[in-house]
Length: 143
Image 1 (cartoon, rainbow, N blue to C red):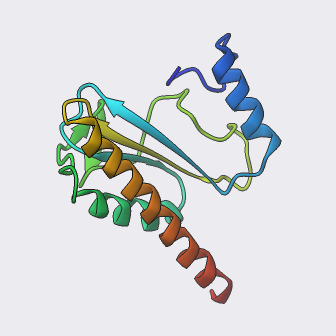
Image 2 (cartoon, rainbow, N blue to C red):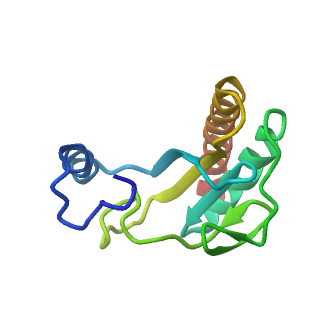
């Protein structure tokens, strides 16, 4: 399912999510994954400056539960400090020609740690993203 979006997939779950995404104007899309080859918590970001202001604090917060994946290559893509700026086509995202494009973040834990650590990292990352997004949006009208 992870690589089926916007490719005319026959998967009913993919079609349902695509319909939901098209019918609404989301400000952001956050996808949660467990990576079988991951060595630490990491994030995949696509797009705007806003993403940087969301992913960095989220990754810092998750270090209470899981270490950050510091590899220079994650999933075949260049990475820095646990952040990947490119990804395969077909991941959960906004429709290809959406304007304005919402921020898109994929958060990923390694497979090995206990579920309670992975869940704690996800919850803390999501809480941090929401707090940072509210701050950014409150500040943006003054730019």
